[in-house]
Length: 458
Ligand code: SF4
Image 1 (cartoon, rainbow, N blue to C red):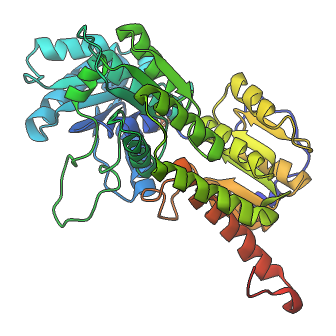
Image 2 (cartoon, rainbow, N blue to C red):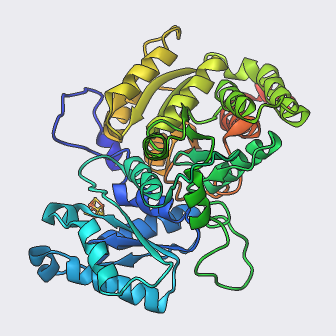
Image 3 (cartoon, rainbow, N blue to C red):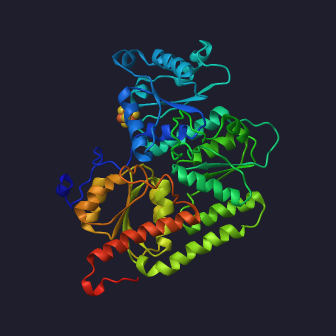
């Protein structure tokens, strides 16, 4: 109801965000940490922060997300959180027995200025970290960046702490997926497997946040990259990063630290971006693209060709994370849809530049904002309505107020399931995305058709 008071007139705002199109850094760091086998994430801040991070991930994945907290109160806020963190490390290793504790900071501990490497080193000196167990950290102040930055920082921490160069270059290929679903990570691994590559994929939340219901609780599910794999990753022959913002920093850190050359690509969403990914894998593996992938590619092409009449000229408004929006916009433009309004909550001039390049031949004015919010998006939609909106669950209020179909895509999705199990990357993922887009458009067409135009067959 409140959104009905959104005005169409757009006023300049510099210091006020309304209805943010992002979540906080530690959520991304916690998600990445869950992609490390046997890892217990730890939030160095107040209990409230940790509860928010856990509940957002739990609601999105419909799985219980475990994490520790330094439980800051007034004392820690004034004197620093060293004592709390050292005790928390001791408690967690003693009671919950993780292989790794991945600590991320919060707004409060960053404002205090807690020095995590020093605190971790003190915990080690005090004998609080058992032999062959590890504590890693990432700085994730949420007043800078978003959940995507937090994910990138924790993925990079895995390189900083574990990757080692042993002098012999192996045939392995590292793949750093961006902030994508567990289903996407599994699909990326499968595509690499089709090319004859067994990748070291990190982080890897498949089989962690989309595992089966077995009737037995597992504190540490089977999935996730292992410490031993991460150690070996420093000797791999290459690293492929999928998503410049979320995966790029880890790949570049690997290059700097261990001289593993990196290929930084966009997320493999849609035909062209998947082609780019497969082509890099083909070169690294020194093989031809197998028939199995050619068939999948052909199927995606077939769907595009069959359904083009329903996609052509459809105006779309999108809200999401930069890596996803860049690949998705490219896909939408490639099937002749018209992305009219594009908003990400993550700031960055490069994003706007990339999107402008992708839409340069679109015969329509395109609104783009990095660091924008959903209020601005709503105002844009009021000024120029679209046929379809794509974005996370928070868009549902605007979708209802404006009576526009919504395709849930991105993070977080709090009111639907499926994203954890069915990928949207790769050729098969492209088919699924098109299926969801067409379902939304054709359901609306059926709803609005007069009796005479209510067709049984498309
Ligand atoms: S205080 Fe900062 S770290 Fe904590 S939940 Fe809020 S934005 Fe996130």
